[in-house]
Image 1 (cartoon, helix red, strand yellow):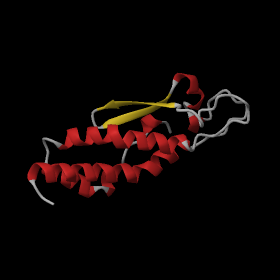
Image 2 (spheres, rainbow, N blue to C red):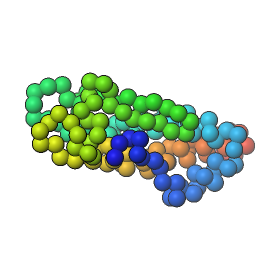
Image 3 (tube, rainbow, N blue to C red):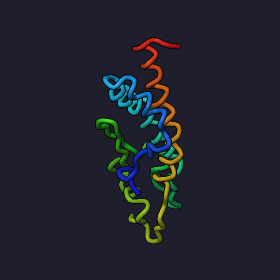
Length: 136
């Protein structure tokens, strides 16, 4: 699984969808901003800590900022920086090492970040509802 293969399962976030419907003209902008400021950095951080360390003395992706993020409408894509492309297909065990074994660090990191990202999205939408429509 690469970062392109992951998406949030919205079946468990009915509250977020309900809140989004309260401000249909603003929710898209609020979610995009939240993904850029909170969601993507959180996902990158949770992925980074699980990147395996090679036994060879070299510059490791684990201990460097090895990931880049690009944004599109209501989404982000996380990919390794060019110098760390050896971590590109962790679940396929494709890389330069002879004894590659499938790693799940992208999937695990994204799964760990998902509930926090959904909470941040919900909080951001609720904050915008309160600001736009008035409330608490």
